[in-house]
Image 1 (spheres, rainbow, N blue to C red):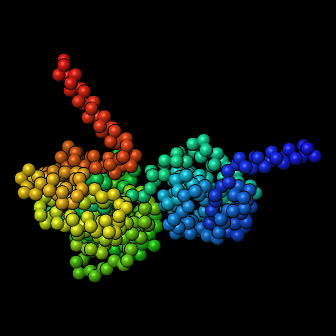
Image 2 (cartoon, helix red, strand yellow):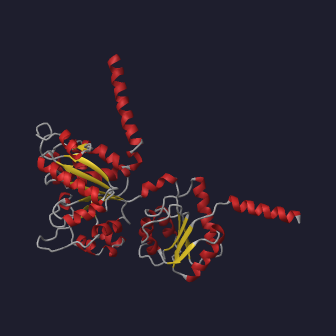
Length: 428
């Protein structure tokens, strides 16, 4: 009797020490639903949220609970399970374990899913206890900091980012800057970056890169829900291993009118394939302009040193504050007017906009012309250009891994090192 009571107390103590798992599942197969519910019952104390659905159902959820430990999704009906899996990983909390289930029993698919951040993949039909074992393995790996869940801080590394580049006036070089920043970001992060020219009628990005502009961009904006991995592969033109671009050359007589939220829906669909998107935002289409700004995480506003430029920069700055208050706004000066000869000084711009200028981009028409002639980004055609040098700190700031802490400290440290080295040389 005493032994029985002590064993019961031990079981209760063990159950109290074991943390309860918060879990959700979206499964379309009825038998699999029952199996997942049974396997998760003990881990979640019967509170697992198991619903009829698939990975498409999960992708439609915009607000995930921050304490979600485990998510199980059905990939059986997905046309591109790897692309959908990559998109889902950018949406769920960074510490969440994601396990896929499906009918395809293929090692290549398993490896591809692991590469985009899934923790396991189970082929249907599910055996008794298969989900429990997979979840416990992943939870153990998370606790030990191993496996695909590398660290709790790794979530920011997969967060989708959209940088919109906007020129307050024509001629400030917004397209050149967008192309250059995209190429430099890809080289810095060692990941693929997509350029999108949202000026459907008069955009020059594809021309500058010597790539083919196609009409599919208008169709994609009109029906973004039809975008899949195959569509992106066909539409995104590859410039180099890490840089892709999408642009159009619609006839000026075309009467395309973007529907509400078209640009935002398009960007969310394309983020299934690319984490970083750099958008060249048109000045002449206020509807598209507003939608792209609203969907952006980062915005680079470029003005020249002129009264009209500063006036329009103020208006665009207000637009950003109104429609994208959480976006990070970066300010830059550029244009053909030399800052030393301009009647409007950088200090005047900062005082008017009530913000510090992040980047002063010098005029370098020879380097810009060489880049267009070669059909390459400026950072490849003229890596020593003053424009490239001016943009390097800005690109480093966009990289979250170095932007706030390490990057600033490294920059300061490098300045101090050079200063100390100069003192030593003078002493010698």
